[in-house]
Image 1 (tube, rainbow, N blue to C red):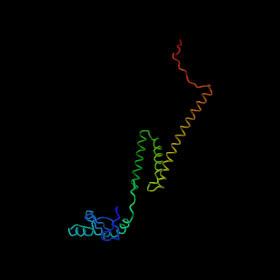
Image 2 (cartoon, rainbow, N blue to C red):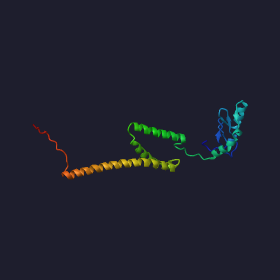
Image 3 (cartoon, rainbow, N blue to C red):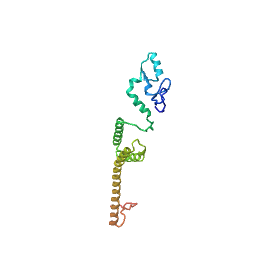
Image 4 (cartoon, helix red, strand yellow):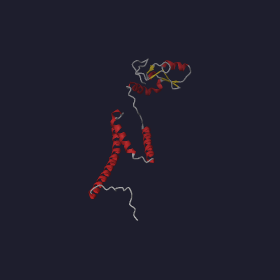
Amino acid sequence: MSTAATCYQHPDRLAVEHCETCQRPVCAACLWYAESGERLCPEHAAAALQAGRHVTPPEHYAEGIPHSQASAARLPQAEAPYKGNSTDLTALAALMAGLASALACFGLTYVLPLIAFILGLVAWLQARDALNPQRARRMSLVGLAGGGVFLLAVLGGLALMVLCFVLQFAVIMSANRGPVFPTPTPFPPITP
């Protein structure tokens, strides 16, 4: 329930629901349930009983009344952008495995470390907005580290290739005292 209303019969108790007939707020001790699941106040529950409908009194749920009242007293929290449980985590893992498989089929597996690095960086920068900032930072560090190691290896390989090219060019230049580029001739000589 989003509003902190009090029960119309017990002003000292917070309401846990509203009667679906008259919309009056009721506490857990005044909340009756119709067979259809409709929530009723005591007056409309009595009217439903007189009409021959089956309604369940609050005493049937006596063990849950303190818990309902406690949850009504809890302050409403900001709505999280994403909520999940173990099933959601399994679905996320399936999504990631499916994307990795699709990228592998098209020869684009080299993109995965870059994606991990970028997503890890974004998650690290926005970790303070997470439900559990410490967990978000730890998980983003794994993405940053996994993608970063690969990116460093690729950059190291590129640097090594450039270094080899420069060294080879320097050796050729020092051995021939100049660049070795064949001079094109407009008319090749004819040899008999």
